Image (cartoon, rainbow, N blue to C red):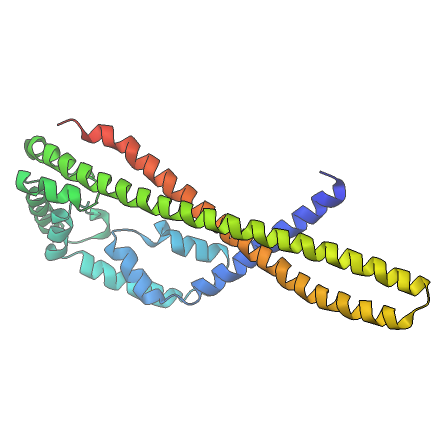
Length: 272
């Protein structure tokens, strides 16, 4: 890459980074920080572990810290009750005991363990597997041997259904890509014809200028102006089609990566 090209590239990257930072900052400042603080606590997280908050602080967004703190404390109060810890366990989720303080901690742990035992029942294994939630190694040994085979059956059904669904989406996108490529090829052909037409008109105009024929110069100038309008529209069409094509290909690539990931998981679900 030439030095000038490198400079242009660096400037463009800085501009793109600046735009991304601006829009991220705007997005952060639209967040209801009280509600966000509640959600973080209800996930069993501390604020300093929250990705969204950390990203917003990096772009120096205006964060309503007092609202965030109030929301977090409100969320902790809701998180640290027995009914919630039971629900966490029943859903196969871990309990962040370090968020909760006081003498009730043993009750909270006990309720969570009750929920875990209900989750880990053999009769719930298949349902837990088809829910889409990954197993978090929460089951005690005396229940795991009955739960896991059923969970794997359900998980296998869930994963296979995802693969089938995403395969169908890929086939649909492939058809859209093929149609978009045809449209792009046709648009580029039209663009090339317009460019050739303009070159021809400019040659005729130059000849008229040399021959000192002002009427023809005016005539060809008007035609060139008309073609320039068509060229601008066609270039915009080509650019839009190329952008659409890139987006479609990116979506297809992402889906294929997800499909491959799920296919790699299938063998581990075949064994009891």
